[in-house]
Image 1 (cartoon, rainbow, N blue to C red):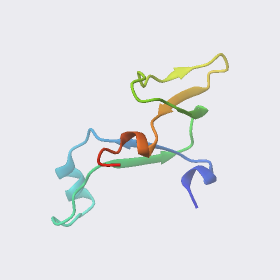
Image 2 (image 1 turned 90 degrees about the vertical axis):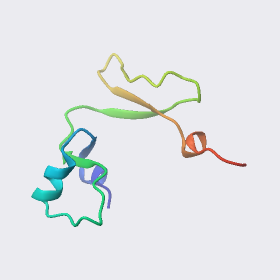
Image 3 (image 1 turned 45 degrees about the vertical axis):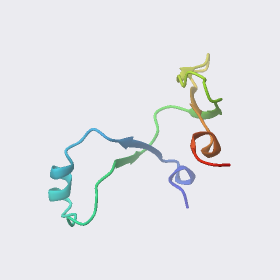
Length: 82
């Protein structure tokens, strides 16, 4: 089951003290702390919208205050031989 199916929203956090989190959560040294994930009840409606390579990936709100979030597909962001 996904968090969204439970009505939860999620936010990735990259600005935190990795050493503090490692100590607080007793994370072993062989594991890397990459991001924190915060879960909770969303305060807004968000819609993921398709973006194109080269587009300015800018969020916007429509007249109903729906928060539109442009995202590139995995194929658009992966680099390498085709």
